[in-house]
Length: 180
Image (cartoon, rainbow, N blue to C red; front, side):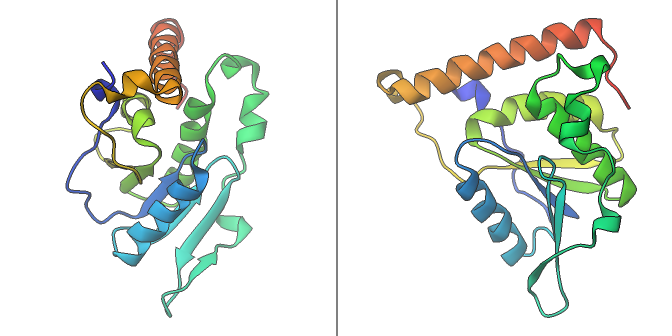
């Protein structure tokens, strides 16, 4: 049951951008994005929740990009949109990321999040991006296989919360068109 949530597409290939999604363990996610940069698996980092973008400079330092390259449709703006007010936050973050990716003509993306979010991110991102965009998924933490999670309250909460969010996405996806 829990292992279904963990999705990865290995090996992660070099990409144009690492999209870091917000949530628990934010510092671990940020460290994973920096690791991808250092290993030359991404040349840009994008945080859709904050609408912030960073790139690797010619001297291999990570620097914030000019605001003119950022999307005008940020997370808070979309959150108020009546047409998508029922969407869960990760879906809105991915809509913001899609706008940024389209504006910058990126074709290879690595999504960075916690391991238990990856199945939902995969489901949503495959709805939003066409086949011309390569999608990869990277998680900073490893997970324990087996049933050990059943004795950890936090893990139980994450598992059931993710299944509820996946069910909600599948439900509203069936009735509402996914915005372009």
